[in-house]
Amino acid sequence: MKLLTAASTLLLLNGAASQTCPSVDEYAEMSLADGALTFKYAIVLASSADERSILCARLESDSGGWMGFGISPSGEMDSGESMKSTGIVGLPDDGSVQKYWLAEDPRVDPMDADHQTLMSTSITKVDGTTIMEFTKYLQEDGEFEIFPSGENTFLYALSDEPELGYHDVGEDSFTLDFGMETTPPVPAPAPDAAPAPAPDSTPAASPSGAVALTGAMKRSVAISMIFVFAAWFGM
Image (cartoon, rainbow, N blue to C red; front, top):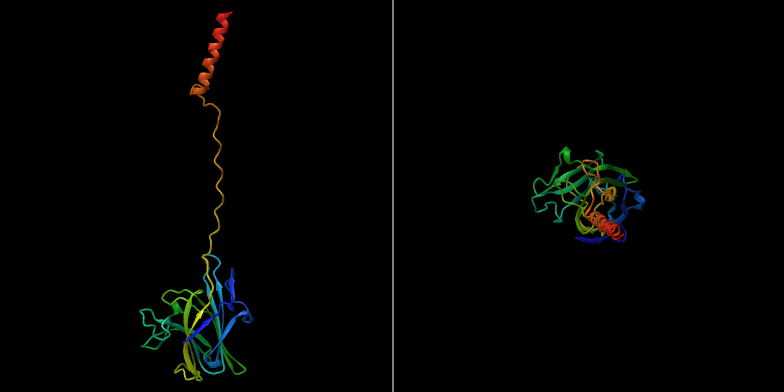
C-alpha cells in the first residue's frame, strides 16, 4: 500500500456556486502502478448548505483496456464490513463509466440506476492513451465517504482488454490525505430586529379623560398646596 499526501498540491476550490470542476491543467496529480497510471484530481467544496462537495477525477493510462477506481477502507475489493466498497469502471469500447459494488461474491456488480450518480463521465483514447474522467459526490447514501481531510484508501485496476475481466496489467491500493480542513457553510445572518419603542413618559389618562397623576406628581402638588395655604394665612 502506498501512502501519499497532497496537502501542498491539492487544488481546493471553495465557494464555487455552480459546483463545476476546474481546468485539468489545475488538477493535482500522482503517478501509480510504476508509472503506468496517472491519477489527476481536484476537490470542490460546497459553499452553502444546499450544495454538495465533489471529487473531480481523471485517470490516464497506456494499458489500452478497461480501467477502474475504487473506494475501500480495507484496501481490498471486499471491504470486510456490511457496507460494500464502491468501484468506478470505464469500458473504452462501450464508452461507459459506471459505478459498481465491489465484494467477495460477486466481485463486481453494477449498481442500480438510483446509485448511478456520477457526473461528467467519459472514457476516450487519445494517441494510445486511455483517459477516464468522472465527477463524484464525496458523500453518498450507502457508500464510503471520501474525506477532504484525513486518510482515504483508494483502489485502482488496469487491463489491456477492453471488456471487464481480470486486471492483468495491475491493481493496488493507495492512501491519500487531501490535507484540507473544511468548515461547515455558515447560514446568512437574519435581518436585525427593529428596536423596541421607548417607553411613553406621558401621564396616562383616566377613563373620564382626566390625566392620572403619578405618586411623585401627587406629592409635588400636595407640597405646592401647603405653601399656598401658608402664604394665604400668613398674610
